[in-house]
Image (cartoon, rainbow over all chains, first blue to last red; front, side):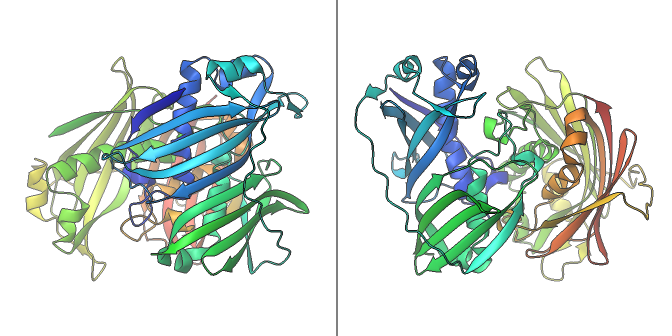
Length: 240
Length: 240
C-alpha cells in the first residue's frame, strides 16, 4: 500500500546552501511512514499496546539530487514485504515535476519493549499496511570492516536527541556521520548514497566517537561508545 | 502589517514529550517573518543587494503552553515599529482554537555585510512591512550580571549549525542554553519566559561554553568563547 503526501521543509532546516542535510532527508522520509502507520492504527502508539516497538537495522539510500528547503516535495513510502523477523519498507522523495530525488530502503525488526529483545513480526501489523509475506531475506550491501580510522570526533548525546520512545532517534547518527567529515569535505562534495547498519542503541549522557576514513569519493564510518560499536556506515559522494 | 500562516511542526522535531524545544519554537516563529519578508521583496536576498543583513540583538519570549508537534498551529508576525537603529518585530503562535500559546518580541538591527558594522535602518525596508517610525527606544528587561556559574558545558559548533548567511543561526544558542540544564531539570520543568541578549557572533569550528546558574524557577545563562561573551540569557520556568 503506497502512501504519499506533500511536504515542504522549512528554511530553518536548510544547510548553508539551502539543501537538506542527510539527517533531515531521512526525517522527512520517515514522516510519511509515521503518518501512514498512524492513519492505519499501526503506529508507535498502537504497537506499544502490544508491548512492542519498531527498530531499524539497516538503510540503503540513493540521492540523485538533494532536496532543498521551501521546495514543494512529495514524500512516499510503502511497506513492501515482510518475513518472520523483518519488515522491508521503501521511501522516496519527488520534486514538483515528479522527478525522484532520493530513494531509501529500510529493514525493520520488532522489539519487546520490556526485555529489549527481538520478537517475530506481529503479522496483524504487517497486514494493516498490506505488506507481502515472503520467505526471502533481502541482502543489503556488505560494509567493509575497517580497523583504522583517519579521524575520530566525539559527540555528547544531547537532551533533544532523545525522542518520544526515550531513545536517541536513529536519524541523529547521520548528523554525527556527516559533521565528522568537516566543512572542507562537505563544502566540496554532494552525497550520492548511504549504507548504514545499526548495531546497538546509544544512551542519553554518553559520548559517542564518530570515526571516519575518507577513500576518494567513498567515506567509511563507525559510531562507537567505548568498546561497543553502535553503527557502521559507508557513504559515497560526487564532487560539488 | 500583520502576517499569519498555518504551520504544523513535524513529529521529528518533537522533544521526548512531543512538545517543541525552545529552539524549534523560535524557528517556527521566524518562519512566518521570513515568508512575509520574501513576499514583500524585503527578505535576506533583497537586503543583501544593499550589502546589508538583519542581525538580532534581543528577544523577549513568553510561553503559555509549549506547542506540540503535529498540532495545527497559526504563526503570526508584525514589524511593529522602527527608529533610527532598530526594528521591533512581534511574533505569536496560536492553537486551533485561537488561543495564544507563545509570544515573542525581537529587536533587530542592520549590519553592513562587508564591514560587519551596524548601519542605520534602510527606511525603504521598514516601509515595505509598514512598520511605524518612532523615536522611542524599547526597553527590554535587564539581565542581572552574574560572575559565578554552577555549571559550564562545552559545545563545539557543528557544520549544520551554519545557515545560509554563513553564520551560526541565532536559534542554535537556545539548544546550548536548554541542553546545559540537563535531563533532570528539563524533565521536571516547563519553560515560561526567555530573555536573551546577543553580543557577538560565534564562528564555525569554535567551542562555546554554555554556563548556567539555577536559582529556583529562574535560570541564568551565558554563552562565551574564550574571554568573549556571545550571549546572555535569563529563563523562567514552571514546575512540570
